[in-house]
Image 1 (cartoon, rainbow, N blue to C red):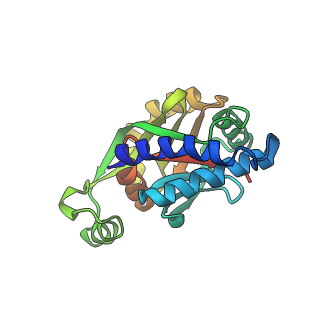
Image 2 (cartoon, helix red, strand yellow):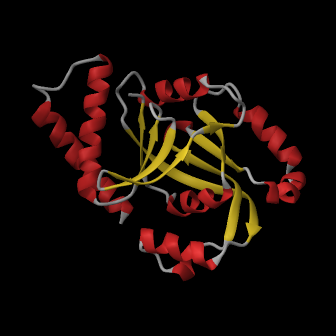
Length: 212
């Protein structure tokens, strides 16, 4: 379904650019904002979930039909606030690229298991059969987009001390690997929030980065 909608989006995007080329701003922040607006209108019509890195509010959001249905604060794992600026600049490619598509997700560390009540809520919101939802908590996972963009999410809960201890070396290596890379983010996320994000993150899901 997502891949079909992506195909529709790409086709519509070309038509939209031709139709609106006369009125679209030609460069700068106004042009980038215009492209974001046009992209979101098309995604809202496609009726599929999509990710938005809303940097003005420092949030990662899941939107559906243009409405925020889930959001979580962006917490840098290495306290480098400039990494968001660098990430957004590289993502937009001088304002020429608006939408990128998730290519894969990788679960590094998981923990058994989540309460059925929370799974029921998540499945109701996302219209997914609860039996299909993963019951391992995603403690440490990575999302990867085209052109080498990636985000690593590490859960932050005291109850995960044991899981963190077993993966200390991997985490140190991962932190060093992600640091000072303009196309990589390493973020902290509450573990109960990580479950929804991980389950929605299917290959092909459209993603926007908004700086304004």
